[in-house]
Length: 455
Image 1 (cartoon, helix red, strand yellow):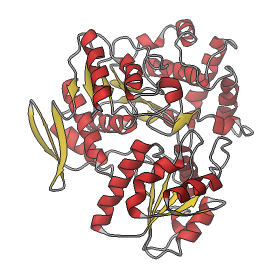
Image 2: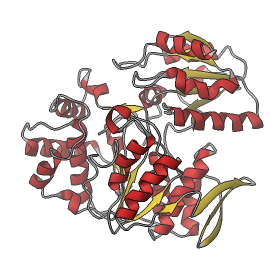
Image 3: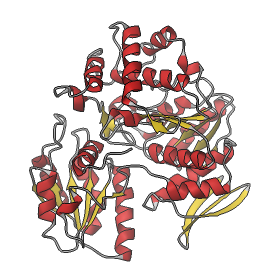
Image 4: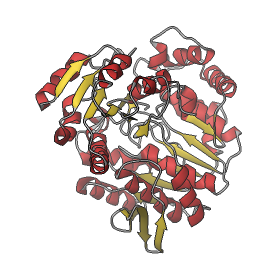
């Protein structure tokens, strides 16, 4: 199931509700609003509804290019971004399925290395809607079927396929023979759907493993590692384990990667933060273990050119950036869960070592998350917190609730009406380091208002 601010984003509730709760402003929005009304629940993990629809459309999931399937709690999107960058640096055309989108639904589907055009997307959505003929089906199921249809019809060399929620009953889990599977770090998220412990959540993630397909595992907690190891063993799979079979670390400003085949001395990843060295190493291991057609030169070029919006993204220009003085830093990150907050805090600590600066967090969050738990990761910085109610989101925490939880943690906090108001307040803090965080919903709103949507 799709969930904005997802298990690797933040609660990742259906991103389309941003559109369907308001008057449609485009043909795409009108189609998406109709599709969002076909099932009474936003999340209903099952494959029973979409399999008949796929059959009506000629089972496009069986006609895909070589596929790499990625599950996990955090780092799925970054890992896919690295793999895409490596493959494209090697001259390959790549399909990508990601969620959620930040500004436009088109961001979820990349065909042969280009975002799907609105014309092609609308035509495919309407064809799938007609084939479904009003049957009950969730939004993420019907849009995933649409993506498979587009992927099957458009030639490409590879498909990088991200799960929405979990693995076993995730709508993407209909690909029978992936080239390989990747499970990024598993942590607590969406306990109401996937289980209340790391072990239970790992059982769900392990559902993407397939007999005869290779697998690479990110760094796991012991209880998750044990579950994944047993699941792989039952399927006759011997995974590569990060921290055991391969390693990647920052050394003298470089990424040094090692596995049984040897060492690579590589440029640092263009994505910022210490955790990105781990994410890049996971992607490199997958590329080598799955025997993808990329060499060291393509990996190095991919590391230099990789992009992934709203992941510690510097905002250097645009309408919102213009509200701040030249001495301020402005950063945007969609991190929303505790694991993501800790990664952000490590990144800020690294920045502070290079240039100490007062930290201001501009924060909005969906009500599937506890702002206090998120903010605890920043205790060492004593940031000022400017809280927002995310615009147009009925399931967003009120700014006043975020302030209350920030105060509980011991931070100075105040509610504000808009991102513009918040930035005007920040402009009065000398040489501030400003981080907009807490939700991918908020990140998308910021990119739209700044005039710098993903492309």
